[in-house]
Image (cartoon, rainbow, N blue to C red; front, side, top):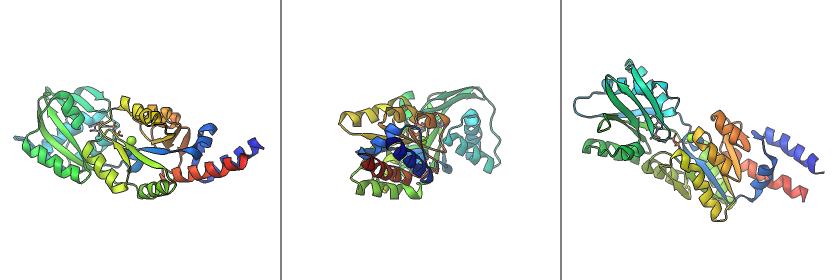
Length: 294
Ligand code: ADP
Ligand code: MG
């Protein structure tokens, strides 16, 4: 009878928008204590747009965008796409750059007009040991309180010359998913490489129990491990390259279907419709199916 039940389960799963790559994980899903969500692209749509620009002395928006879009030219990151789009929308040509380098989880760097230029968030400022002038501090505070991600343009590893505020949109279904998980007695956590400010705002907005912010890509799986060491059975839901080790580490790895190939290959279950509510359906399906088997 076991294979039959699993077969029904698999086709029901398909009807519910999920693809099961690992049946054992599907069976474990009924006992989950905690669901950890990646923020960007998972709880949010990841379709970021530039909504504000602050420039330093001697810089204007066009010049800042020209350099920033040039430096982001070779990056596939959602942030890079947003900055290139902002430049295009304003009719600004991208500066040509050389020596492009991707600093995973921190940002990017390249050489533009003979200057070394970095683009990245607070993690990167800290890494380079750069202090922002007051205008950038207040710009970032304002943006952060609106859950906007701030990306800095840094010249010669010493000076912030511009900052960009990027707004993302929380998926409608995220709130629903979290409420339903809570009503099942499951704790909800969030993991992000984004700043403390943004993480806090999103966590509060969605009623998330616990969050980890400014987590470097290589640290994401250790946060899953941390919860597991507290005796919890943990699911991880993610979309990005950076989420792959955490998806593998989790007891149940759930990948967003529109996510990167690496994430999908690391997931036990794939959410075909990119809908966080399907995490709830998945757990219900697991409870219903495996109860029958016993
Ligand atoms: P998340 O975990 O939220 O999906 P990432 O780990 O991909 O985010 O990135 C973490 C942080 O690193 C971003 O919030 C941003 O500050 C910085 N960053 C990453 N890639 C870029 C880029 N291409 N341009 C600028 N900043 C970037
Ligand atoms: Mg992501």
